[in-house]
Amino acid sequence: MSTGLLRIVPPAYVVRRPHRMIERHLVAYRRQWLIVVSGFFEPLFYLLSMRAGLGDLVGTVSVGGQQVPYDMFVAPALMASSAMNGAIFDSTGNVLHRLKYARIYDAALATPMGPADVAAGEIGWALIRGQLYAISFLAVMAGMGLVDTWWSLLALPACALIGLTFAAIGFAGTTFMRGWSDMDIVTTLMMPLFLFSATFFPTSAYGSWAWVVQLSPLYHGVALVRGACAGVWTTSMLAHIAVLVVLSMVALVVAARRLDTLLRK
Amino acid sequence: MPEPLIAAHQLVKRFGDFTAVDGIDVEVQPGEAFGFLGPNGAGKSSTMRMIACVSAATSGSLRLFGLDPATHGREIRGRIGVVPQLDTLDIELSVQENLWIYGRYFDLSRAECRRRATELLEFAQLTERADSVVDTLSGGMKRRLSIARSLINEPQLLLLDEPTTGLDPQARHVLWDRLYRLKQQGVTLVLTTHYMDEAEQLCDRLVVMDQGRIVAEGSPRSLIDRYATREVLELRFSAGTNDSFADALHGVGSRLEVLPDRILVYADDGEAALTETHHRGLQPESALVRRSSLEDVFLLLTGRSLVD
Image (cartoon, rainbow over all chains, first blue to last red; front, side):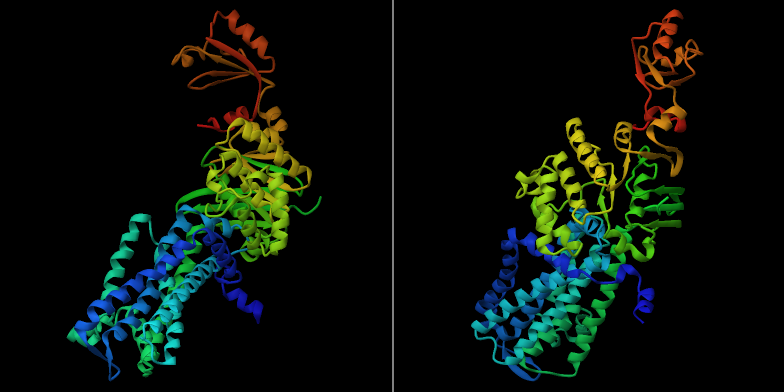
C-alpha cells in the first residue's frame, strides 16, 4: 500500500522534513527578533486609532442581528487582516530573498530535503509567526474590553486558516516573480483587499456591489473571525471555511510544483 | 573491479532546444579523483547537477551507488556532499550555525552536528571565525566553509563545481591541500574545472568536455602524452603579425598553433625548435620553452583555449 502510494506521488511532493526549515529560521531570527516583534504593532496602532477616532462617530453596527459598538465590529477584522499581512509579508519578500538572492533553498535541496519540505516549512513558519501575532492581538482586545465571550478563542484557528491561505498564495505567487520590482504588485493587491473585505463596514454598505466583496479571500476570513468574536455561528461559516481550504490547497500544489521546476531544472 | 560509484550511460540533458549534455558515458570508481575539464558552456555544471540529484536527466541512465536518482534522490543526496559553483552559504547565519543547520537537513542530532562542526572548522582553518557572520569572510574562507559544510554528513562522494574559480593563488593552494587530504582519507572526488593546473594537481583521471560531449578521457599525463608533444615553444612576435610568421615556421615542430597573442610550436625538443627558428632568421620578441599541459590537449581537441 505505502509503496503503491509512493509510486503515485512524485518524490518532489513528499513532505518529510519541513521542521528543518523552521528550525533554520528560529536560529536566523535570534539576531532579528526586533523584526518579528515589529509586525505586532501595526494592527495594534490601527486598533487604537479606530477606537479613539471613528468609534464615537459611527456608533453601532449590526453583526448577525446583534448591534455591536464600532470598535468591536472593527477589531476582529483588523485581527484577520493582521493574520493576512503577516503571512503575505513572510511568504513574499522573505521567500523571494531566500529563493533568488540568498539561495537558501538551493543549499537545502542538495541535501535529503525536497521542494515540498521547503514549501511546507516556509508556510509553517509563516503560520507560527501569524499565530503569535493573533494571540497577542486577542490578548490586547481582551485588555481593551473588546472580548465578551469565550467563543472568541475560535478566532485563533480562524486566523491560522487565514494565515495558511495567504502564506500559500503568497509563496505560490512569489515563485513567478522576476525580481524585487514585482513586489510592488503585492502592495498594490493588498491595499484594496484590506479596505474592501467588509473590514471597516458591513457588506450591506456596498449595496448591489456586495458580490464583489465576496471574491476577496480576506472577506471570508474576516467573516470567520468576526463570527467567532461575536459568538455567532451560522451555516455560512462552512462556506467561508471551504473557500479558504480550497484556495490554500491549490496554492500549495502550485508552490511545490513551481519550486521544483525553478530549482531542479 | 568493484561496482562503480557513478555510472552514466548516454546521459543527455536538454533545456528546450538547447542540448547541454549530449550523450556522455562516465564511470567513476570508489576512491578516485575524477575531473570534468572544459570551457564555460561545455556541459560540466549540467552534468554535475544531474549527478547531485537536483536535476533530472532528459534521457540515458545514471546510477549512483547503484541507485537511480529518479526514485532514490533523497537517499543518494544523503550520501554525497556538494560544493556548488557559486557559494550558497546562509548569510543570515554565523559560520558555525551554517554547519549546524546544514547537518540538521541530514537529520543529524544536535550533539552530532556540534561535534562534527568543531572538527570541520578545524579542518577548514576557520575555528577562530566560528562566530563570524558569513559576509565578513574572504573569498577563500567562504570556499573553505562551503567545503566544510559539504562534509557535515561524512559523504562518500564529494562533488566540487569549479572549486577554486575566482580565488587568489595562495587560497587555491590551501584549498588543493585540503582536497588532497580528503582524497587520502578515501573520499571520492568529482570536480569540474577550466584550469588545467587544477586538473593536473587533483585528478587521477579526467574527461575533456566540449559542447556537451566527451572528446577525450584518461589520466592527465596519458592525455598529454597522447595528444601533445613533450615540450612546447611559445613565440611572440609584435602585435597582430603572428599570422604572417606561420608559413615561415612550417616544419619547425611537429605542429603549429597560431593564437591571437602567440604561436605555439609543438616539439619534443623545445630548445632545438628555438634554435631552428633563429636559424631561419626569425626574431620573436619573446620565446619560452615549457612542458606541454592539458591546455595544449584541449587546444588540439577543440581548437579553442580553456579560459576565454
